[in-house]
Each structure stands twice: as structure tokens, then as C-alpha cells.
Image 1: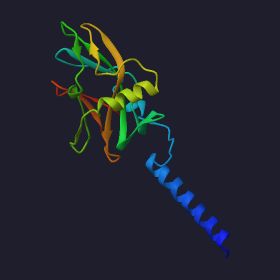
Image 2: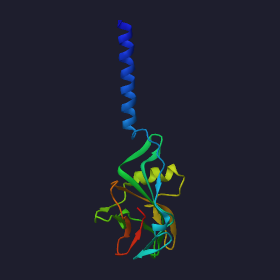
Image 3: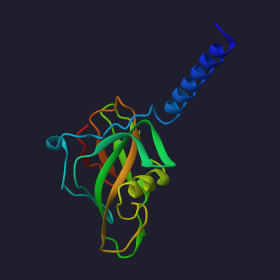
Image 4: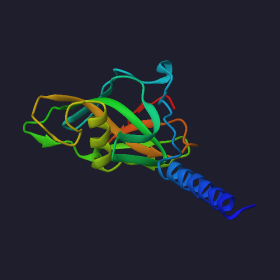
Length: 173
């Protein structure tokens, strides 16, 4: 084998290695569509209230691995659970919807809190939605948005809880 053939083979292998490393760094290059929960097993349009706050699920949640577009993307450690919700402030004044207000629990007793705000903002911008959930909400007003959790792939029997009540909403996963 000549020097030129060896050099070309080496360059080709290097390019393939770089391409594979880039795919791994970008979440495997997957553009997988979200997986949607079975609507029959989700508590859609069932209000859950605690204190000044009320939440109801607008549609079945989805699971997805990557959120965002372009240079601003986030990859889940497990899977992002995207919960589509209407949050209402029944209090006497404007309040920020606290991320600590929501908890997801699985059938094994594990609890999950919402992901950092940047992930939620990336999702909202990606889908052209209204402001992020944790923006201030005026008294007597409601907001349709998403609450996003990072859950392990083996998490099942998921329910959404609201701080201040033992009641939960079934999420269908």
C-alpha cells in the first residue's frame, strides 16, 4: 500500500471517528418523535387544588429525550416528561408559580421535581408557546404551559402532585 493510500485511509477513518463523536455528543443524532401517554389513563381536565393554586392537565403528557432547537438544546438524563397544564392563581395577589409546587411520583415511591427553568424556556420557545410556567401570574388568572420533569426510563405509574394536597393526577405512563 502506498503512502498516499495509507494517508487517505487514515483521513477517512479520522473523519468517521469525528462524525461518530459528534453524533454521540448530540444525543445520538436521534430526532425521535415524542411518545404520548394513553389518553384513557390520564386525568385530563380534572382540577387539582391546594391553597391558592389549581392545576389541570390539558392533554396527555409526552416523553422525549431532547428539548430545544439550534444551539440551545438539553438532553435528559433519563427522559423528559412534558406535562401540559393549566395553572390558576386563586389567591388575592400576583404570585410566581413556584417550581416546588409540583412533584411527580412513580409507582416505586420515587419523587421528581421540575427541571431547571432553562429547559422549560427552551421547550416553550421551540414550540412557540406563551411565557414559561414560572413567570408571575396575576390573581384570578390562569396560564397554559408545560411542567417538565426528568424521569428514568423505568419510571411507571406516574402521578402529578401539588404541594399542599395528598391528591394526585394520573399521567398515563
